[in-house]
Image (cartoon, rainbow, N blue to C red; front, side, top):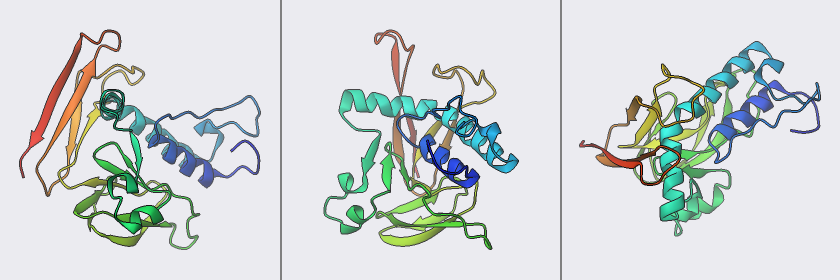
Length: 217
């Protein structure tokens, strides 16, 4: 992204991938030809980039918990598919696909959209079980490969049946990185599950809380 031609679709897909990465930075510069700020691009791309930046901020409770798991339980935020499926050849074939925390699977969009249908296609492998598209709620039966078509506002992100995703309530101060006082909990049907939410004051380990979010299907 440092050299080459300005490309609105490429920068948008790059930012979408960044939102589902351990560290999310735009790395903008003073060069007028390489600035990564959303307002440097067309109106549609700008709007989508802003939506994804806001989504990243909403995911603070989920990310904070997953980073705690990484620190205390040695469970990385990002894990290749074969990490959990070492006996499955498909897990090795999907080189761009990965687990994002305990609840999600992500596959970045690396192909341009078809100019006619305005969709980009990516081949993904869905593990055994039932999975839902995080953005549109479409369900997928697992243990198979399939081609997923994503419009400009979506990318292949899947949540397992029974998945629990804690999100920040954006009616609060959107600039704060503290654990939110109010949250929205997104749940995905099809299975029972427990998600252990970790919170602290970002200063003292003694001021922390572990909260079980549980639902029965």
